[in-house]
Length: 220
Image (tube, rainbow, N blue to C red; front, side, top):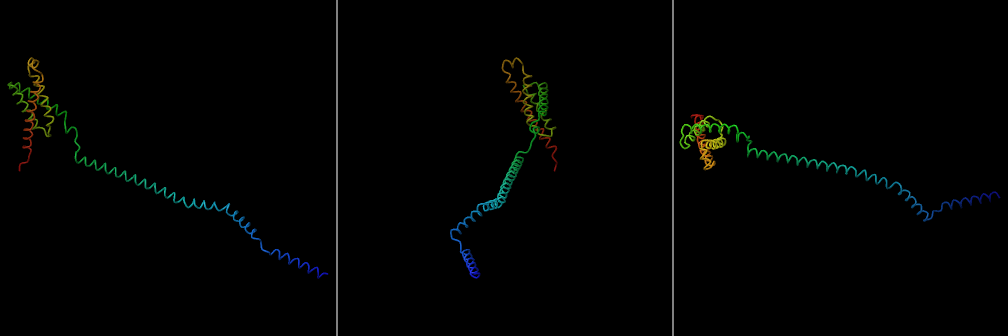
């Protein structure tokens, strides 16, 4: 009896082992595989890939930004240097073509006033000494202009011309009979006096300058 019960228990155990060792069905394996894939892909696959892409792309974006900024700075510096260089070259060319000349070198009001008074006095003295149809005024203005050209160091032809014409016109009005000036016109003695003063002053000043140049020139 004991042996029969032992044999029966051993046969039951062998049947259980045989049943436990039987393989799972195909459906069970597919369900298990799908479950594992869904668990592994839902949580962790997207995070690392996105972070990796962000990490990989950020250095390139920063380098592109710095590169574009440096290119813009370089273009700005080059444009500024070109503008400065062009302005300097234009200024130097203008300086060579038209040298800087002060207003006093072109026309001096003080010299104009001095020549007008000097030539006017010469016209008045000449008319007083030689009262013959304006010849005395012509000689007096010529003499004063000659002395001015002999004494002055700078050329003042513009001041001499304007001063002689002004002095001649004023002297012509002062020395003309008032009745004649009213009857004819005030413009006639004014124009005649201005012409006489202009001619005498220019010719006298030219000869005075020429004599000064000859006296100051070195003898070889």
